[in-house]
Each structure stands twice: as structure tokens, then as C-alpha cells.
Amino acid sequence: MHPVLLKFGSFTIYTYGFFVFLGVLFGYFFCLKQAIRENINKGVFSDIIFWTLIFSFLGARFFYILTDFENFLLNPLEVLLSRSGFVFYGGVVFGVVALYVLARLHKMNFFKLSDIIVSGVPLAHAFGRLGCFSQGCCYGRETDSFIGVLFPKDSPAGFAGVRVIPTQLIEAVSLFLLFAALIILKKKKKFDGQILAFYLIFYSIIRFIIEFFRGDPRGSILFLSFSQSISVILMAFGIFLYFWLGLRAAQKRNKII
Image (cartoon, rainbow, N blue to C red; front, side, top):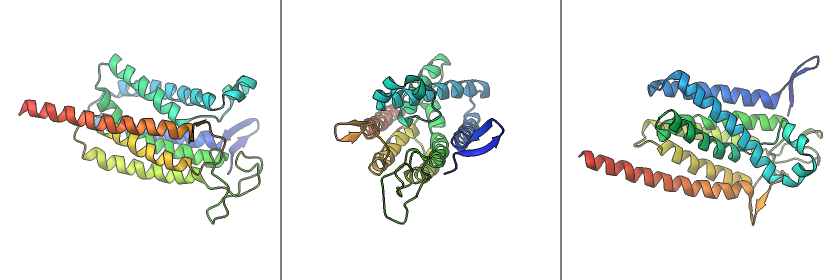
């Protein structure tokens, strides 16, 4: 609830940007450590991470424009140049596509690479949600319960002057738990791509549920929010990926035997 972290004259450090930076930094070094353990060249991996992040941010902004297209048509420059206004799922979709292309270009195993990178995504995302809380965006529905938070009136969540569910903090905690779960699962994984599949399944479930408690303007498809619709698709894809890759790995083991 403190959008400005530090201010030196005309130079301002925003809390949202600071948390996003921390998330990217911690996520990168965690993934880099995993990559080194897998004997992946540090320079190549850093290059892949950099471009994947660039396309992820572009995708997150593009999906935001889709969810608020009418406002974009009225104020295109304001939307494009805004500090906020990202849809995480856009980052996931564009990021995965970019990662696949980069893996092919570097002649690397996409699923092995994705398991390394996706294991650090919840950590980075959790810090991003803390940034959302400080900005007052991605807020929840009005509530009279003890968990309700009253945001400043000049924030997106405080314009109505009522207490709202802190969905940002709820998701941040869920993401830290998912990060811990993926670390445990990665130690026991049986085939490449398993962690990617687990992430798609579990995060989709988390996001689908949290969407019911969101109170900010949401794009919708029929009776589901835009993000819930994507959650259903990605969860189904994650389940398919898990069984398909598991079956393929089992067939390879049987051939070896």
C-alpha cells in the first residue's frame, strides 16, 4: 500500500517495479543454479532467459490490451506507456512459445529447459504479487470480514473507500507454496517436462479459484473471467502433457529394456 518506495528529487523508485525486479532477480539466480547443475552453458542460458523475459512482458501487455480493448482504443498511448497493466497468462503463453523457439535455435531439449525455468517462475511471480499489493491493483471483492484491507483512496483498490479481499497476498502465499512444492517434485521427477506439466496444472487451479474473489475490472468469456477461461485451457493442456510425456518416457524405457 506504498506505491512509492523512494524518491530522490525527480527520480522515483516505485514499489511495484522494485518487487518485480526482485522477483526477476531471485528467479533468475535460482534457475541459473539449476541450469549449472544440469551442465547447461551459463552464457547460453542467460541469453535464453533474457529473451524469454522480453517476450513474456510483451505477451503480458498484449493480453492486458485484449481484456481492456475499448479503453485501449480510446487511450492507446496511455495504456501502452502505463507502468501497470499486465496479464500474467499472456506472459506465460508468449514466454513458453519464445522458450520453445530459443531451445530449437540452440538445439537444446525444450522440456528439460522448461522444467528448470518454470520451477523459478512461482518465486518471481510471488514477488510480483507483493508489488500488486503495494500498488493496489489486482484487488479483491468488497468484504466485511477480518481479512479485509482498506487501501488509500488514490489507489485502484481504494477508489470506492471500502475494505476488499487482499487477493494479491493470498496469491503470493499460494505461489511461495507452489514454488516449494515444485522444488520437492523436481527432485523426484521421472521425465523431462513433468515440472512444466505440474506447474500448468497447479497454478491454473490456484488462479481459477482466486479469480472468484477478484474485484477489479475483468474481461470475461461467457460466465468465466478471461483468466479463468485460460486456466481451464492450460490445466487441460498440462494434464495432457503429463500423461503424454509420461507415456513416451515409459515407451523409451521399455525399448531400452
